[in-house]
Amino acid sequence: MAEEELEAPEIHKNQTIYINNLNEKIKLDELKRSLNAVFSQFGKITEVLAFKTLKHKGQAWVVFEDVSSANSALRQMQGFPFYDKPMRIQYAKTKSDCIAKADGTFVPREKKRKHEDRGRKKRDSHDAGRGQHLAFHHGAPPLSQIPFMGGRGGSDGPAPPNNILFVQNLPHQTTSMMLQMLFSQCQGFKEVRMVEAKPGIAFIEYENEMQSTVAMQGLQGFKITDDHPMLITYAKK
DNA sequence: AGCACA
Image 1 (cartoon, rainbow, N blue to C red):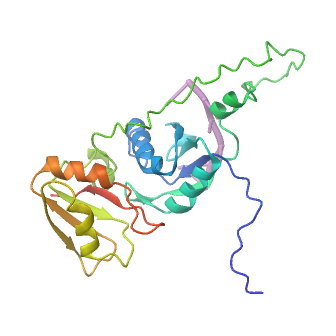
Image 2 (image 1 turned 90 degrees about the horizontal axis):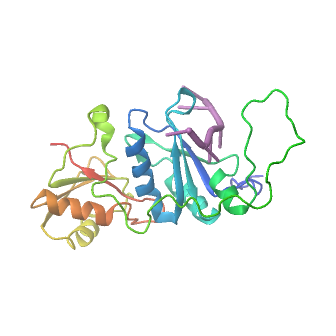
Image 3 (image 1 turned 60 degrees about the vertical axis):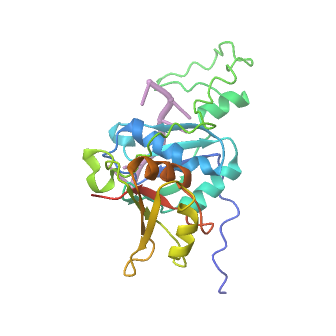
């Protein structure tokens, strides 16, 4: 008895993760860019998918090139506060089309045909247009501004730039000295303020917004410990 | 809650 939760060895892993409990107020385009921003630290992302239909609101699929990336993303970002809601992450149930296409195993699903005419396999061979995906520019993050601070304001969009940054998801043992060492590397650094009453968060002040923005982009998702990628947003004014 | 490939 008393075996510590041995994770079932038979979870069917997938290089695609399925995320739900996402903030539904966020526009799809922004949501996908933010997901790309947070998850690209775990490996190359092939595609991020999200839909706005009723059945699919608040959910997204992030397709990695490797299962190992998906695996660490799943474990490390589980419950990560994202637009003020903890992400719930699982492996996707099925292989993503873009992966199947690269595999050569893609078989176009027929949409609700009553009679399946299985006699016809149109040009099945190995067409599959390989390499038509890789939709994301992971090498050069397009995040001129990382927008997942919709949270408190939600519908009013991302918090406006601020020379003060708000950092969340810090591990408990974080000290202001650690943060100072990290954030003082960026131009314009002024000071770190931690809130004793609230572990896990900090405020980092820069001389101006340009500088705080650079720092945010540079340190977004930085892990002081392995299971706590920091989430940096602009502080509310 | 909700597992798709628009």
